[in-house]
Length: 280
Image (cartoon, rainbow, N blue to C red; front, top):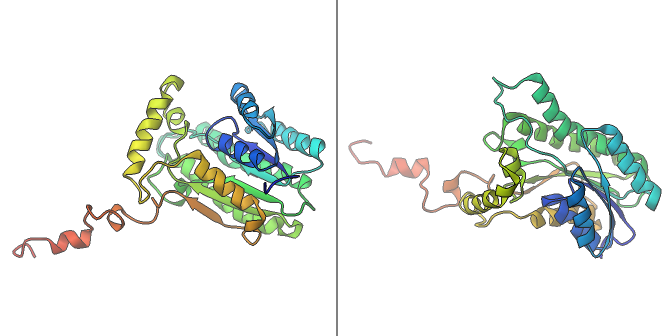
């Protein structure tokens, strides 16, 4: 019960990582304001928790919605202790030589501006709160090519640097800011990002679970609870000396090329050594 007496605000709360984090923090005593555009899913997560979960509809691309969310949380509880800027989607999937300006801007608003505004409107209610913590969902896509469409990756890289800059800006108020970089976490973002109908998302998640077992050193698919556990750590007093950084929760997929951890995959060096003598 690390969060008794604490107020948390979580966006993208109706499913996946957000839902798991709502249940985690509420289960440990926090009053959680769960925000999402999915009113049915938001009401369901509130009903499924044994803790104090209060749902509010919030479109993170609409700045007044973000401000209203933060203001409500502070008005009802006296302030905000934890903010998890989590909501996002894949956005425009076009490559850089085809993407239009409107698609680019919409993706940046959805993934990057929403986090900046979440911080902006939460901070006035976090000043002076002991142990105040902001956590932002970034991605391994923000750390290298090949994990996602271009606009998504660039926006997530922005979230990483924003988190670092905010940590220095807000240190004077005792507010810590960190990011989490999930790897392949088994949520609906894959199906939704590919435009696959909602009724087929279970099948998509099954494929992701199967593929991810073989794509990383930890031989299982990532789960929303894996991220929720990291959020809880970063929000807790145990992380009181951690700010301005990011935590990888990726099953080791960014640790190195497959041959670094899979004995059945030869490295280039091993392949050269195995060449026929005449070829050498």
